[in-house]
Amino acid sequence: MGGGSAAKLLFTSCLAVAFVGAWRLASTTPPLCRLSAGLLYAVNPFILTRLGVGHWMLVAAIAVLPWALPHLLRPGEDRERTLLWSAALGATGVNGGLLGGVLVAVGMVADRGRGAGRTALVFVVAQLPWVVPGAIVLASRPELADASSFATRPGPWGPIGLVVGDGFWRQASQVGNLGGVGAGLLGLGLLGLAVLGSRELPAAWGRRAVGVASIGFTVAIASAVPGASRLFAAFVGTPLGAALRDGQRVLALFLVWLAPSVAAGALALSRGLRQVPARLTWSLPGIATLVLVAPALWGVGGALEPVRFPEGWFDARRAVDRAPGTVLALPWHQYLDLGFAKDRRIFNPVGDFFGGDVLWSSDPELGPASQEQVDPREPHAARISREVRRGVPQSDALARLGVRWVVLLREVDWRSYRTLADDPGLEHVVRSPSVDLYRVRGWAGPFVDSAGEMIPSDALLAPLVRLDASGPAVWQRPAATGWLRGTAPAGRTELGLVALPAGGGWVWYWPAAVTVLAHAITVIAVVIAGSRRRCRLTTGSGRRRPPGLGVAAGGEPGSGGAPHHRELEPLHDDDSERSAALRTRQQLTLPPSGRGRR
Image (cartoon, rainbow, N blue to C red; front, side):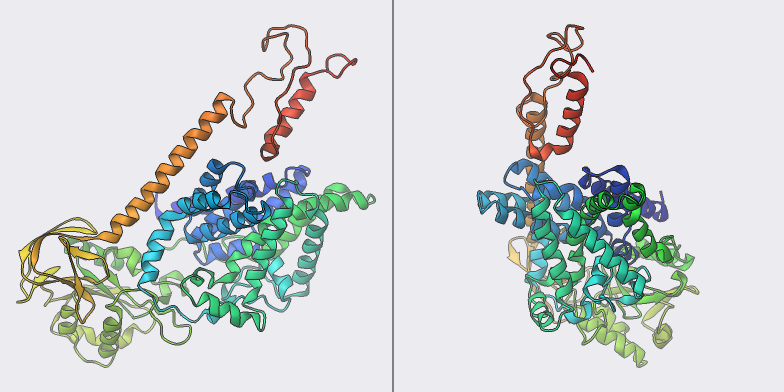
């Protein structure tokens, strides 16, 4: 399919799912109001900004959110359904888990804690695929950058700016022209319509959604409020609060309430402004949304324009694929302004492009130096980078660190690394206008013994390698707690590599087994919940009405007999849309008493 086509399919699918989800939440309003709700939720400056900066999993979570909201706000009514929607949000990672957790928590509080233990367990089971690996990483205590760098920046309109999707921590990436008087007036207007229409939301979830919106807005603005920002920074500096470091992302919880509330508010306003055409009033929120995003609607200001990597990148990757080994990415930056990407600032793409074991900087350079990855080799690689820039040959140090390849992008400050070409311990394999590739001549192999000789090995999977029996050995991979040789735990060398004890058998990583088990538990739970729910619905013991009930027939559906009233089973609040359709069909097929067939 190609990267460009795949990305377009992903983006359009997320926006379409978000649009339809908001449309459904506004189901009690006319189509034009529902159209406005869909536009306000799916193409607002908030979601387009996140799309433009590459926060695709957050956008996917936002797309699922309006579909899950009515159900997760009443989590105790049908825990199988709660599990399924929690898993759908959890599939988008920490972003969806965070948003879904707020919905479930609000629902449990509104239910006054009834069955909260079982409901919480159901939600946790649905989140295991990201919770377990996340806990393993946090146990290694990564060094996070200062949270103040990611504080919400709502612009001159303060909190009103958040209503229109402003506030991203890097203002240069913010979509829309949100600094003018018009943006503030539009924000006030949308907020007024939402307050007016909030009371018209369905009783099953409307009031609870107000609580969710309040939490989302409060968290999003907290880092920008004097006094509260210090408390917020202290919380997000802990392992538990790290996911909220970019608090503005939680604004999605406010927007998922805002969209249907604004639609209902536009409908209520049209009833009071009889001199204004109702269709115009219903369209106002959608028009306001288009005005806000018009400057960046086509391609989000060019941020979504597909870019092909230069040919030199492909030549370098083919060379590495023929002889795999650890790759060091230079220049030593986590984010770069790439020339072939029209100088846009992007996350260093070497790791994704080359795959395998790639060493690159994890310091976002937003303040004091930090290391956000848990790779113990990174400080040594940073020192090598500094020495290369000073003109000191580093091929021996690279070999000791287990680096086989050095990729030098001809970007940013690459000229300060030109002395790599003068190092006799490096072979210049690829030379191109976009990238240079060097091979470290002294690289001994993935596994080496105490004498520096390579030990034969056979990698079955990434965390599972069969290694010949030997004395103590070093695996040229980043050390981490959990590596074993057989049943003996591995250690760490002074350079951060895996130090294997003497012995034989498999080298494996036991946390990987725990992660696989967590995934299996969630998948099995989802399959069981889905099967049970489908069985209940199709057999008539659940929410779905048996087919044929309520048709105009004399005994059997379609028999042509005289129409008569039939006893209808109760309709449930959480199936409001299906219930409305059934009531409509009932009105069309069952004649009122004394008036004949309609």
